[in-house]
Image (cartoon, rainbow over all chains, first blue to last red; front, top):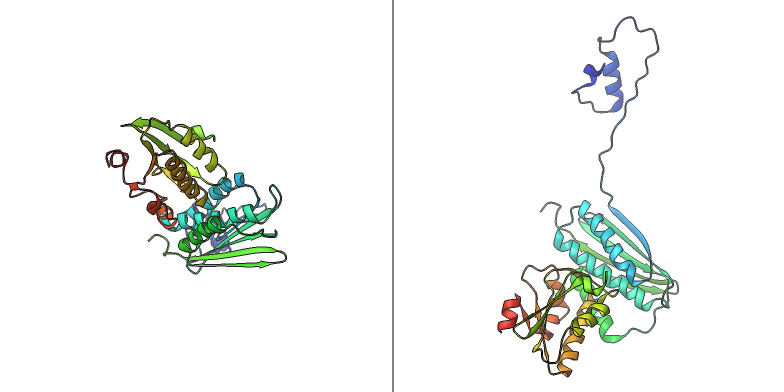
Length: 173
Length: 114
């Protein structure tokens, strides 16, 4: 039976089972019922989505970057784009940490998605933004728009959502 | 990681050379800035910060460099920056305006001899 299954390729699990069972290599004298279990091993497909919720605290920035690096590595995002996305996201999250909440409270959600050659990141906080502090704020924002192709920010009574996207080179380029 | 682990300090030709390693963001930038500044004595010509080995630096780090320049100027000392051509953070420094605000060189040797 093992010989029958070895080395073959089948379009799906059913044909594999029928073919293997159907081979005449089975001894005539099988009296017990024969059960065959066919398993398919999924190739580990990298997830196109990233989700993280962090405490709005500076110490959370480095672990968030580690997780995002890993995610983008698996999706073969090229190193320059990876660095750009990391920095833009870092700035947006740092802004939320600095401006959205009183120190030590609140969370920030970071969602990423890759599809159709686009990488999109949203940074969501549920705070009320305090008055922005001119120059410092400005540098973070200009970095964000330089690193990404599109950046928009929407503030409602529930909080602020920053949505940024970047066009990616085809993987492997 | 404490600032001591990410900042290497040496002296060359009258300059203090601080080499920053790893990643800099709002969580550690102030400690790194202070540790670096504390290494500079009055007799030193100035400070050279080599950021080439950093794998990440955000606007908080950029703020620190600008602030170091100002603090040194008040003491009549100079800040010079070293960013290797292939540095991962070079683009962020350029866009953040640091390479204009602070004299920038490609290597420590260039920075000490300029």
